[in-house]
Length: 462
Image 1 (tube, helix red, strand yellow):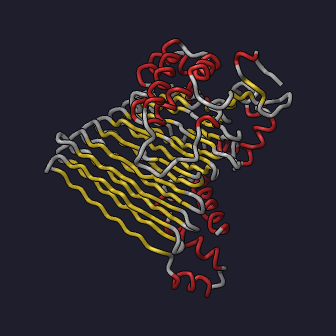
Image 2 (cartoon, one colour):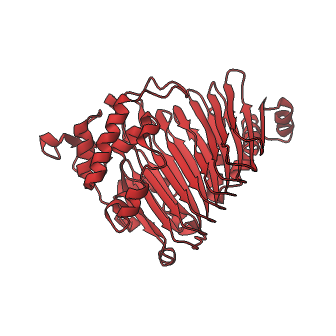
Image 3 (cartoon, helix red, strand yellow):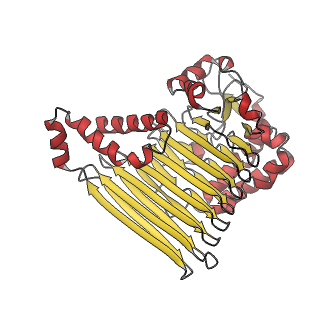
């Protein structure tokens, strides 16, 4: 069934009256213009998309991660829109979509522990809500399209893809061309948001891409915890996630950004995240990476201001058929800046887990400190774990340390737990959950429980 005129080249995804509008596969200036028209972009954004496409076409595929030979953009639909507008009441979201999110704990989590929730389904947000008391503090939490065309349009134009320019790498350019959805957050100076905000991204369409953009600005002396959740069902064709996260942490502010990514194992997760941290401010990353066929994920922190600080705590679990290349990057520019990276990686059933980090302390960052600690756990003899740290230290007035270790589950520990009546698979899952404890204890209780459930499922599948 044709939904639009033939020259707009849309067709119905589900082939029924409640269909999802899906742009044809591939990537071209015509497709980018159609997305821009669908989003009601201002002229500058349409031009930005087209220039990004030019950068994408002339930029080679990165050579610093696992191969992505199975990804063909000619077979990926870059825009799929549910047949609904964004709703402010959960009851108004179409039942099929609502049921999908409710199985994932949305909006139950909103009622119990969140100050606001955004829910994206494929290429568009279908629900967005923020508590009245948070809005009364002047906190802005809305979808990117509303921010782009509304009261904060100038601020969006000033900051959009300034931390992650399209020239950064091929998939940043792809994102700039076809981005859709995502969240915009502005916390006024001095405001402390006591309970977290959350955005949840669900890619439900077969053979499609999701390209949401998250832009957060935390004002001077403000405080925010933002949670990001991601998931997708499994198909027998490639899906693509190439989102972008840009975080601005102003003087004396604090931002914690927590992520649980549970993509399906046909997903190419090529996400880019970057934070700019000003004087005396604090940036905290907490990351759990599960699922996906291939991942490139290296959140980057630029410690621009003197005495700014950043921490990254992350865990990656690579199972059968997975090649997950993850890590973190810290760039010290200001004086007496400090950073700490603590990562855990787990590989089993032939999975490949690669930890890749970079610490740069520039010549002007005198008195800075950096510490990197990475540990890997292999569950069998045919899985693989690699550690690839890089240190670029350009001043003698710095304190830098790095520690790495790789091990296997102790047979003695498994035997001890089994001798107490615990089945072998459960015993191994308990050991792995203990290994991941440094991450789970940094998450809100319900998200720590979700992460431990994912670990148990992976162990059961083994």
